Length: 140
Length: 141
Image 1 (tube, rainbow over the protein chains, first blue to last red):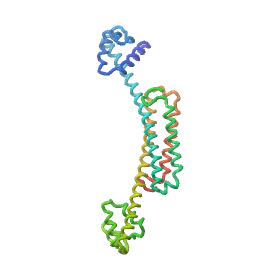
Image 2 (cartoon, rainbow over the protein chains, first blue to last red; image 1 turned 90 degrees about the vertical axis):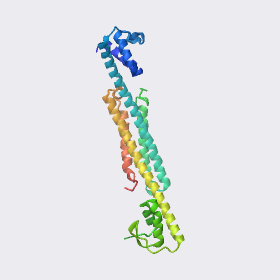
Image 3 (cartoon, chains in turn brown, purple; image 1 turned 120 degrees about the horizontal axis):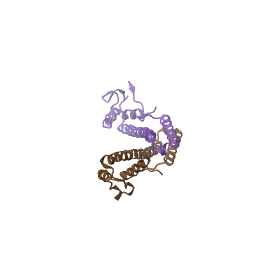
């Protein structure tokens, strides 16, 4: 695909990403007929014909799928780090609970354990903060 | 034949039984002797001197057994939560690997601090899991 073709494909992919997939076939028809520009100025193209429109739509939808995969992974990354932080908080509370219940093993020597968990929690907070994307998978 | 000699022995017996059978243990304290159906190998010694003594020993042992059960639950919970935290960190590491494979530029351009922090956090969690004095069943290691 040429540079201009890539730009058009990128624009189309952005539109598809926002558009309900039920509307995609309508847009393909408009591209085939050269009428997509009336709705989307950036798609003011000559009629592509059925085959040309299909080819462009395929390339753009592949791009959309790729973006969405990346977004899902970014969201999952955020959620996994947040989940680990929550489990650490609960674990710290349980150590205190063991203290209260009078487990001599935890009354005597849990300081290192708490320190390790506290440090792990801090590292995860830092990781969550410095990673380049947020909970929605968007670049911060 | 193991002899029951203290309130802690009774608590251990109670802890090993379903609570519905606890009154059988109380009866064993009362009558003494051996061959009780819930634990044939235990010897409860002489019959209890008084009902008051039976109640006192049983109540204290039951309280210890209950407390031990809560302790085991909390220790098991601690193990489970550390395991879950480790799993989440490992999944996060996997997510970053996937993002790199997908060519996500945010995670390609020498952005290895996040990976490094996750790696250190995992190491600390593994150390904490190894360091703590109880295992996945809540028992002493």
